Image (cartoon, rainbow, N blue to C red; front, side, top):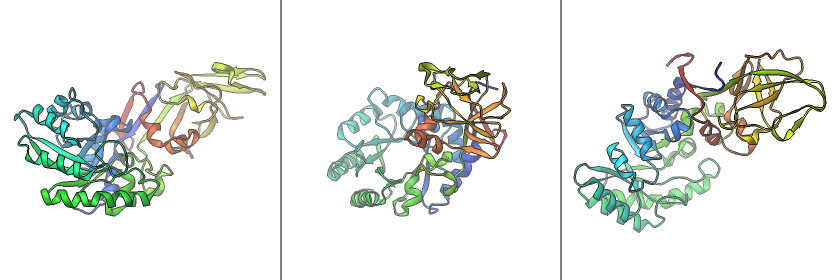
Length: 373
């Protein structure tokens, strides 16, 4: 047993990509979002699995993430979705990444950095309601598009926006589409072949009119529900399981406590098991007295504070839990299953944060339906 282990089924990622691909018209390309180390699953293995499942583009958040894919020998189109500083531009250009622009100063800097040595592909972003990156003013977006179109070292490649509520509020999605569509019409007059994209995983499932030429799927590729409910009702297959093991078992009597601050004090004879996994591994401190761990096909409650490197669980009465037993935080054990959505519901967050929060201290092991990947 390893103190903590995240096992990732790349075959599940491949099947999830194929499942999302089936939502699309054959003319619509699938872009697999593998930012944040593939949402905690590993960027390079996740990218390869998604490409095998039907994706033809990849997207990341940073220039360094694009460089990681290139260093692994992945040659497909890679779009850097996030802001790129002047210091990061050489990394993005060396990775031959597509980049996103929304103001003229960045376009000037991009053209200067390219310096006639290469042609940089640029996507223009209109903010239709997310309120983060991109300009809210369509005329400004078109001015940037025209500047890119006129610059010899740049290629106007894409027009994009991003939905704020595709998982919770379809009415606002439609308002964003209504804002985006005139921009699409105008930029297609300038360049009929421009690639238009807007949809994330939730919009792929809920808003077919948002598919345009390309969709950007992230969370669904990893078998996690974009609506943060249940993956199985979307025909998605969770790819990751997080496990630890029972490192110690001890008896506890009334008045005995566990963990920092004595946040658990038993009022009965019981047994406690310690697992060598904690918040430095991604088991949030908010799970203090607020989580079940699966051991031997049964749930056992976390008791006391989650510490940096350990958690303690109270062994269910009569359960034959011994040192060395596997303990599952995310995944299945016998008839019991605990999902990232279940963990998220415990602490009022979303499944994204649960899996992205699994730290690099936790080794990743890759397999294909149990066979070595």
